[in-house]
Amino acid sequence: MKKDELWYYLKLAEVELYYRDLYLIQQCVHERTIVHRFAHYLENILVKNKKLKGFNIDCEYNRNLDGPKRIDVNGTDNYPDMIIHKRGEYDYDLLIAEFKTHWNNDNQTDINKIKEFMESKIYKYQYGVSIIFYENGAEYHWIEI
Image (cartoon, one colour):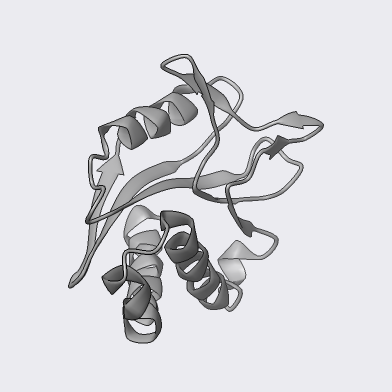
């Protein structure tokens, strides 16, 4: 899948999130709550796409086959906010996404985490993105390796 196509699906999920759940962003609820709703809308969009048959969308996913899916960033174990992948396989890591909210939008640590996952010899993410939710829409920072 090309980045532009993936970005299009992310934007569709964003539109749905802001239409149905803007209240969550306005009320500054926890990031995980917002990410869960975003992933829900994204999954509803992607299940209709034949190119992504067999892929899963997971939030806070911490498994890698029989071990943990994590990476050490600044001496701390980290796992992704959201991924698109095939569970139980190494060769189908499509997207790693990290999220921030407008009241906590310093995303440099997230960008570093994404880079660590993308540069890892274990994980094979094709794309990485940091997304910040503002009250009037999201901002995307694509990570290139």
